[in-house]
Image 1 (cartoon, rainbow, N blue to C red):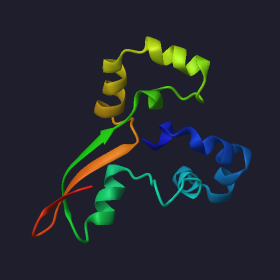
Image 2: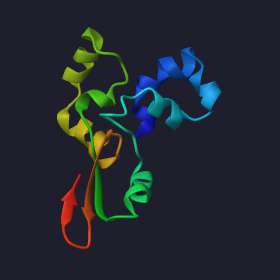
Image 3: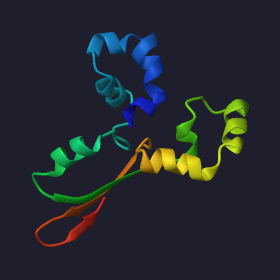
Image 4: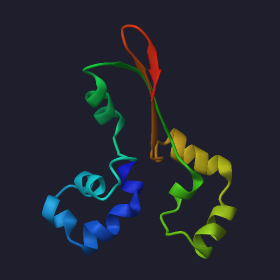
Length: 114
């Protein structure tokens, strides 16, 4: 999941953060708006919430544009038009290449959807 997030390239390589922190995960976290987004693998998420919840299911979803690691523009739009929706859906959802993690958490009292 994280390797397809290419927002790490500029801060990671060009600014030298990958050498400074020696962790792709750390570079991504430091360069993402923490109020809105965080990147977790299913195992990290399960570990994080396990103190308060049981994880009954985790699914990964993603948008078609995540499949093509190019910045927005004419070339990316042209490639996306050629890429069938079923293939992009297979890559992002079934092969877990998307960046949207959905989980069903069970507490002792209720089910919570996050």
